Length: 456
Ligand SMILES: [Zn+2]
Image (cartoon, rainbow, N blue to C red):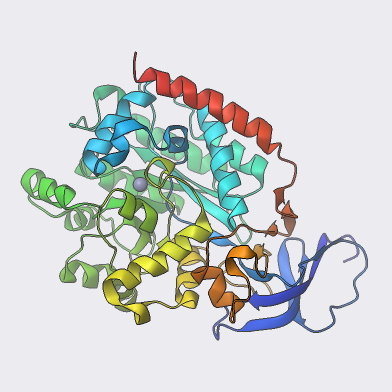
């Protein structure tokens, strides 16, 4: 064992384990070996030779947060002009023309920026639902996302998005033929999907929405996903017009339509899941179909409020997603945890969600929705060494009587340290091995190029 890669984290003021009894350990330490937690405890840390050490300075450690819905390319169009004040469908229609000349290089830059935001706000694993594949551009697109995420050192689920139907929102250039989509899904799953505990990269198949994808598209991607043992992701129940349009065009509400095409079960998670009726909530729960709740985006677009507690009570995992940065307009995971608590309380009262329950959405429930309950979501021996370590307090959280509650109830802070698979990816509040100023300058240049496309 002498050549193991070791990391000892000591002086953790509060270790939020998220284990079955939700223990919070005081004055704790964690020992990681080869990316997995070997042991954890309180009091004096074990004597180990070699390896790296972190002094957590009395901070609060949680399992690394898991982001289950995002469109990273959209951070190139944050707070974009007058469409910032529109609801989902006209907002989308206003956005689409920006992306005609979109390239894999631009996706790489957007992904690195998105990962930087997420990592500094406590996230160790993220998905990216990328559905933008301009017909006349490069078809080798999502590879740039996998490469960029790997360069940042974050766990990544590349969701191969797709659109095969022209609609009021999606013009011909933004669609692909189904055989092209399926061939690329097949290629990506073969190339990037890792299996086993500790996997850093997964692939999921992710048709965009019922208004952009045919029934055959849903059915065939489900079939292919199950052959590859990869997961399925799509948007569902985000707005009332989406439900109305599906009734008019398909004679069915979106979830019933998807379920008819094999889109239900514990290998499926749906983004937003706001406008479900009681029957649908029961159906989702019975089949263990998951939901990615995106509180900031839902508030920003005025889409509505996800029935988080009803869904969880019925049996559906409900995790968190920052959603595309153009409808958030930031990818700050800690902020998403806080907003999830506040938004549920707006509708259901102060007792409807505790800070610990909000943290469950970002950790345990995220792991369930991404199929990683066995190795992620809590801090226990044998699980991956993925930790976010926040400062115990700062100006905006000074003297909180219960610092763990304060982590959620006070303002959304950033991490001092972030550990992914036993690697220190943030130290002293800074990303290790990333020149952030240079990255942001590059991001600004690419964004300006994209903004100009609007006027061409
Ligand atoms: Zn979305």
